[in-house]
Image (cartoon, rainbow, N blue to C red; front, side, top):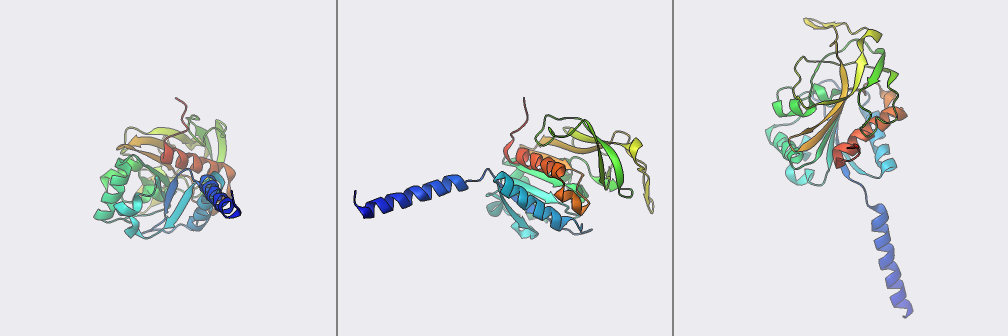
Length: 255
């Protein structure tokens, strides 16, 4: 073999090796559009998800432009992450593209105020499972693990302390298929809140994170994630990566 052929063969092998080593597990769309309250923690959240993508070898694109919600653009992704989105952010055409994405067998991850989004879209409220009602002042409480057989939950003790903004959800459970991962012990914090005529007194049984199979796709939600510094907490990052991984791939639950 002459030198020229050897160089060509080397370059071909190098390109193949580069493609193999650079191949990513899956690709996520990170969406942070707000039409209401804009969380200070969004910037930290974007940085955290990008770091997770580097650590766990998956692709991520961050957008706030709802025009990206069309069938052609969404086809390249395996999971859509709503990070602290609020209120009405998609029009009818964009909603249909999102719905088709889930129905094609792909995944959704909702973080914190994803449950404060698209209240009037029934399909979405079922996708999330529960919708935000009110919250008291940020404070420390005890969380309890109800299911450790889910990606990201294996590192948590059965009961642990956490400080966050504790969402009380509307009484309606929009989906009956929710599998709860975390609950909050309402005896360990003050759940009382009042915003004008809207009153919160706690929920009794108070789920904070859950997942479900929904409309041929997968949905994971966590209410944690209000405070910016939470997005540098290793436990929280493991929690949300577990949800992203499962929603994107359907893997990680021991049967």
